Length: 209
Image (cartoon, rainbow, N blue to C red; front, top):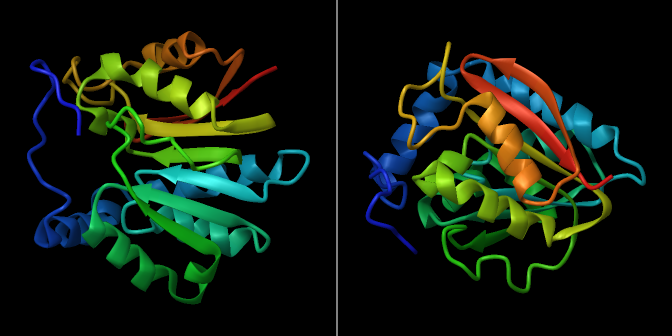
C-alpha cells in the first residue's frame, strides 16, 4: 500500500484476524444508526434508472452493507473490495447463500492501480471507509478513480464520518461535510447531493449530470 509521511496511523490492523473480529462485533453496537444508512443506500440504488445490476463496494469489511443491499435488491450482483482477507472471511459467513451473487476482491484502494480490470459499474458504494485513506487530501483522487469505473447514469454513494459539530475532531483524517462535498466536485462529479446526516456521519450521492 502507498503511504505518505503525514498520513495518520491507524490504531488497529484490520488484516489481523483478531482486530477484524473485534471490529465486526462492536461496529453496530457503537453506531447502531449505521442501519439507517444501509436503508438510505438501498433506497438510493432503487431510484437509479435503468435499474442497478452491478455494484462495487469499497472497503466492504464484514459485509454489513452488502448483506442489506443483496437482500433488498434480488437482481443485484456485487463486487466486494477490501484489503483484509479476514474481513472477507467474515463477510462470506455473514452473507451465506447471498455470497453466490458476490465477488470478493482483495485489494487496497490506497494502491494506485486498485481499479484495474474491475470493469464498469452501475453504482459504487462505500460506508465509513474513505477516512481509511489515512489523510483527507487523498479523497479527491480516490473519487476520481471511482468516476472512471461508472457507466453513464451511474451513482456513487459515499458515507463517512465528518469533522466538526457532532462529529470527529481530527482535521487531518476527517473532512467536514462541506469538504466531503467539495472533494467529490473536485473529482469531476457535476451533481452532489446530501442524503443523510446522523450520528457524526454523512451520506452523499455523486453523479455526472
